[in-house]
Length: 430
Image (cartoon, helix red, strand yellow):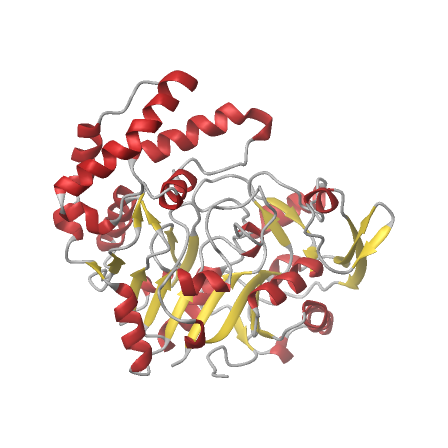
């Protein structure tokens, strides 16, 4: 013990990689339990920037065992591209474990994803086009391909045939695309089987044994709370469980093994893709946040939508995930503002909402109710304790903590590995 879950508390891109890296020296396993290569983490170590998409951030921490668990969908080609890129930079990737129950993103999943988004037009979801949703759909429809299947060509062929039987009708008759053959898909997947074999195992057994042996296990979510398939801003969400509950089903450990849940949240808010965003800015302040914060997608390169901190969403994330701690990132980006607005509630057709409306229409029409907090001008990148922060920055953090409903245990003051202020111990037991 303990088991620690790390989740994004907004729409993603909050800096989970930095938080994972902060904990890296104190944990033995880092587990990715949902999503695929549709989101990215950026970690800066000694001025070296690492962009990870599918791999757990813990792969950069010496001695840590990185795990891709059963709740993840895996694009094998992307997996090896990332591994090879890290090997070329001298990173030891030999400890990586991959769940045999993890589902595979086949080439036809990427094709279906892209043509479907184009077909939807104005009703598009804003996916990354990497086949994540179609792979999860096949999993739910019981026609998916799992890692174990790569090692039995007969079973693999049968599963590909079953999946393509319907998809080729869709591609040819609805989308006017060519049919995809079973053999081309089989050959593309089988070419990776020998290299994958040593990595693939029953990771649920491995993780439960690690917890039994007193190891520290960190469960790292892809995407974020507001993109969760059940609890996010549906339908503009991802296709997996990105909240703390997903750590249990996505890794094969029981809920009683989780001791703390850390939510990562920016000192402002960003979003990529379609969907409502109450505090979104369309003026020079929004562009300032985008440029100063480097708000461009790690995976897609898309410019992120930017807005002020939303405490309604923070309270919602605290409740849904059962957050015990918050890591507040990118506080430094707000330096130089005379006033910093914070959304404290929503106005929906003249009615105040202090909690997030889960009705899609109401949330779409939500207007932010702001409280103006005093800004600061001092450079805070060298601050290493809470007392090092300017008084107004301290007051901003305290206000966010009170509004959000749980303690802020670490504060990011820059992109580098050591540009963070520890406030409370992030690894603790109930």
